[in-house]
Image 1: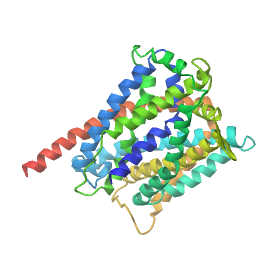
Image 2: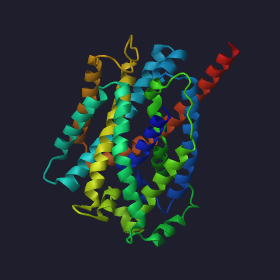
Image 3: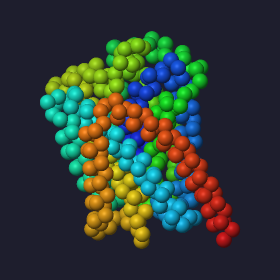
Image 4: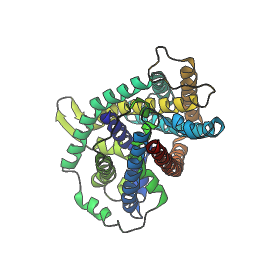
Length: 369
């Protein structure tokens, strides 16, 4: 089960492009982005390691069951509802952003509203599947996409268009103190462990997570690449002009492999796959958290038949996403994503520290008995 944990870590770190993380970092490239990235790497890796202790202490239990061991339903239900809303929003923001990208780069004649509706339908179906099926979907999606994404990253570093002097110029501003917005954006890359709020139900009693040093390694590599590569391609000033900066960066690269010439087409297809996998997983987690608020709810990792509540909750999530995109423009979506990233920083830190304290108490009681 170790690999599934790192699948979650890798997926979330790579999806930072769809949550405007590079754009938010680049806006503060002279005023604290680098120190914010360094701080986020330290804090994010620490939180991830603390959360692994929680997983070890409560194997086979998701977040609702862990809280249910210590608190009554009237306390846990509002908390699970709040966390469910946060997971749901991350999937909605990603889907909305990618529907705009498809409209802008692949098919300008299409409607982003129609594209978002089709993406939401696919994610609704995936989210209603069992927890076991969702972790397999995650594995297949990453096996298909990650090698090609790493190839694109390797090609970007080898490109003659990459200006290393521009990257070194921005790197000289690392002494400026960190700021909240770039810190909130950067730490998102290290929060892949949060998927185990539900997927921890799949872990056996003797589960031990190995190779935890991969968490900061994966996060730091993708974070540095997300920030510096666009600066190297577009320069220290022009890079701040693009909202979807990595799509423009991919469009600046070409390949010489027959009909595969423009990298942007491959890039968007790969991220279409990752977007659907990510939204499916976080909507499934959100659905399970909402279900735990219902009376008499019992966790099921692989039921024989899909419960009706799965369809009701997942369809509601898709409908809210589509309707929100109808009333919100691109600038408002950016503001929503920014505020969500900032808000989840405080919620995530409080939740992980609180769970860590509970795990220490539970571990002590086990030893005494």
